[in-house]
Image (cartoon, rainbow, N blue to C red):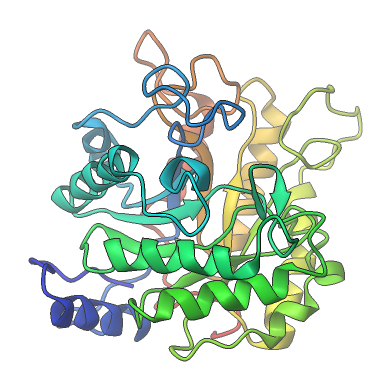
Length: 351
């Protein structure tokens, strides 16, 4: 998972990078995998406003945004984008204004020697219609991902594709759609990792109950990473609307991720936590976060924290510096694990 430096404008060089990534970064100098990254939100905001207005309904980071995180040791960014903004009509061409904003963000990442997971943040839907239904044929989803891979497969700021955020209500459609997405990307990008999220909102706790069908997925490059989400509020949805119970268990994160890790180990698969976040105002949540990160490090499972991004305002899970320049308590915990761990590959299935 180390990065290859240099220009990847030619397809042959892009293929070489992908091969090194697939081999776990077998470059001239070995490097442990990056276990801590951030979600940078903004580009997928206001999904109810389509196409929406740039810098009103949705936002992209400024041209120097990533520098501050690189200086803090962050190297991996999960970047949510919205299908409808990038492709306003099924099977149509990509929308250039939005695509060029993605170009610019990938350029910024490459310039800072960082890497981006491009996340299709659509919940297995297009304009509120499920993939696999007559309104959104699986072939249209494949068409979209093929266009995405064709455009960005040669970009050295791109690390991986998260092919769909939090599928839900799609149990009978999602495995076939995911396979179509894999096949579509592999037409243009033979080696980069493909992150596969699961049904029931990609819940780590519910993963084993809903996602055995994903074991049938086939990748000719054998580079699938299963990506679950995890929050610590009562309902596990990340909204944190209710106060913590008096008997809140600070091992809750470990308990909620255990079914996912056991599934990965049982089936020899690699795992990733694509979203995890907590509010800043509860010490017990900070302790639970610390326990979870330690457990993930032991199992060589990377995590991207939800969320960073300058457009969040007063969002309680935000890890952005406060107006007075101080860092939120979540960063104090997260930073302990940045650049740490002794993992040569993503686990736990491969370890």
